Image 1 (cartoon, rainbow, N blue to C red):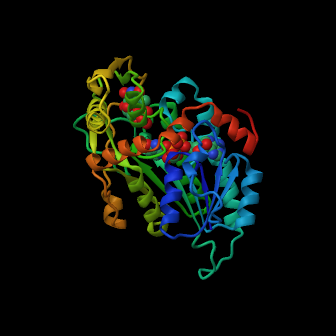
Image 2 (spheres, protein in one colour):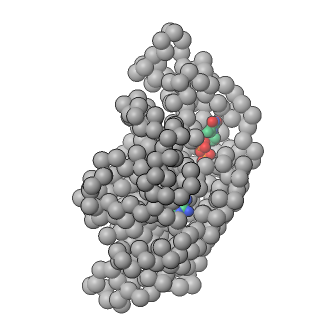
Image 3 (cartoon, protein in one colour):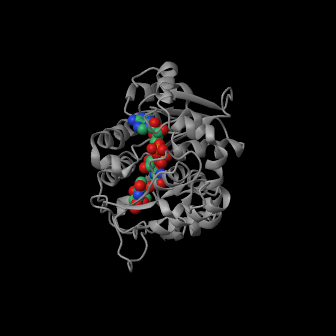
Length: 359
Ligand code: NAD
Ligand code: TYD
């Protein structure tokens, strides 16, 4: 059994699908179901005894302790976070609360559980084979110029947005819980993900859905900001590899070797849509592109040097950007019900009816 947090969100839900499809053991999924958590991401798992969903907060130490004692997981993977840079600029409070304070409570509850595990390499779980894997981002390293080398694990932390700063703080806590208390941790810092089940506030799903809805495709600033795109399934496989074979206490950078300026990403999506679902008026989707005011403090370039994980753990991405983005556009076209659900207010009412809390 493993305990996962935040797996009603984009990457976590993809992780559960990948994990269970690989024939692995059951999971407990602790998720607060914020606006970004969506039970529709987990369709197909209703009634599957390998997936147990618990609505709750990683900062609820009593709940986390109870779950750890009840299920005795051999590992915890922390996906839960507030994850959108624009929201962190408008309201950083939730980011401080979940990403920093929440991670602290989770870590400390896990430390209490781990410290009482048997000191016996043959037991499972034991103090030796237990793992706490913290899922983080390349944004903790700050921004690069066009000629800087890509981020390596040894780069200094220089976060620029409230989101990046809160994730950087959580990474530091995780590191300290290893160095001070000996908790067997692993940290992954990944580049921008794309793929199925991504909430349409992030660039790629936003552009696909706005294009289909006849809405503007907003490009911040000059559109020349560079991101390193990784298909979410590649990220999930990398996390699995780190969990099973990563060296305790280490950080692994994960990236797609796919640097691309935002404007090119958007034009690529437009071109794919022109082929798969041409506009009825005969116009092209690029005509919907609209340049808008830039994001404050917008990082210019991210790029990941993923040689450590490739060399030590023999992981590299399977998808190129061309193959991954085509599959992704097709997925959003093939799943209109998911799209309708994620964009409707009825979803919040459903969450409250089933799991309590506030809309
Ligand atoms: P997401 O916003 O889609 O999902 C976050 C999930 O966490 C949601 O289901 C939400 O309900 C849950 N959550 C939020 N606060 C919680 C709390 N206090 N307790 C329990 N659950 C809570 O995010 P994502 O894109 O899936 O990202 C997952 C992780 O990966 C995050 O830690 C993020 O920083 C990291 N990451 C994301 C990307 C990316 O491109 N999306 C890249 C690198 C790293
Ligand atoms: P985003 O998906 O928000 O991820 P992040 O900020 O974590 O990299 O944004 C990806 C890039 O796209 C980023 O440089 C900001 C830019 N962007 C736009 O130009 N327009 C948009 O509407 C959004 C959401 C993002």
